[in-house]
Length: 193
Image (tube, rainbow, N blue to C red):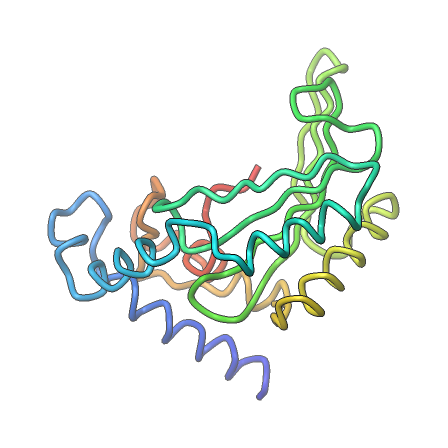
């Protein structure tokens, strides 16, 4: 399938779960057919599946010197997520560098981004990056991508696909207005840190 057609197919898919033309603070949003469909999907994925538990165990085993954190928020967004720190980084520490895997519950697709926080500088230093990653993140990126693909059989989305606009949709929990959403926000989460 051509990348444009794949992005178009994913855009059509997210339209089945997010009502078109409604903000998420509109009562009709959750009452809509699409909103009800998303609620059912989130309820079905509220408890971690044995597949997800097995996958996170494999991630812990594959990254023995790293902090691995299942950052999935049930009933919040249609994705599972896992953060893998680079060696020496800890959540809450002065420096926290990690790769983050986002795995959609809507389609067999995933994304990975890099997250950097350095609180040791007076002004602080914080960024998120999508591929290509800085060199120090690339080994973790490749290992996490390999685990996702070999264990779960998911397809990684390109940056072009992730950042395809879906302007008539608003993610369920995002503080977005119409015209702001992209596929990454609907397939996974708008909350990236």
